[in-house]
Image 1 (cartoon, rainbow, N blue to C red):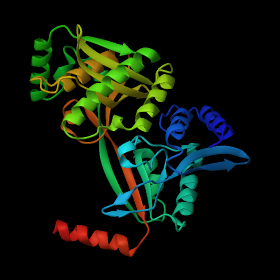
Image 2: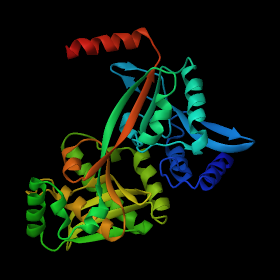
Image 3: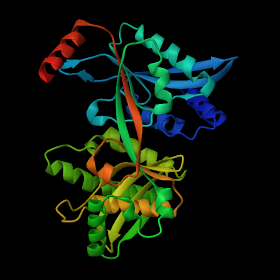
Image 4: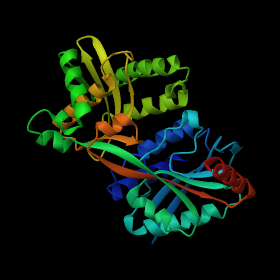
Length: 346
């Protein structure tokens, strides 16, 4: 994509007063820098009265599968990467004026689904308020609703005593015991790019060691994925849209978190723990102390992003729903897959 179009993207972002992260020009430009040569892409632009009112990235999926079959997919937003290198976009949105969103989505899906080269259209991690525009289109769809658990940090600030009392009995007991046994813990809030990058590299070491020990490569084994986030950190940290948080006991590191920030909400994107054999839940301790520090700094929520993992449930007070929407072109291949899945379920 040309520099002129990225300037237009940035200008539209300003006109719409958008503070959303994954449809921002920073996120999109950084993704194109690292994935643009791998994932074919094009830009969809909506205009009204000669003015740009909406922009959206459309990508051709690479190494996308449905069961054993490789399929031709088109994706909305920064998606379509091979699974081992995917940034797994969440809270996905379109950068478009609200009054033009529905007709933009309608024309977009009509154009995509008429293309013979597309067997499947995927809209991944779309927010609830924008999902309905896709569901209202006259196309057969499959929808997966995924909870995104979060902790309301306003409740932390309002708590008359220790905020861990907001959680369930087992979580309260474990946190209280761990905090007592681990002693005087300190929180490093890395809001300068160079310090944040140092913690990022340290976190990668812990993260990779854990997954390699389990016989798996770990997400940071991908150079594209790693350097995509290094560039994001360099750009977003000075803008207070990303931060690295380290919890330590003197020189002993307990855990490190990589958090993205959108509209005063902290998103837990990745983390690393040096000690995986501890009798304490070091991940929960690290997240809890990051929540405390986030509440102290005035953030509204600590969001664990999509997924229903136990640690997300026990450290949360509420949840949102994000949607994965899929349209498939009717074909013998998909009928065969559906039949086999139905047979296996029975």
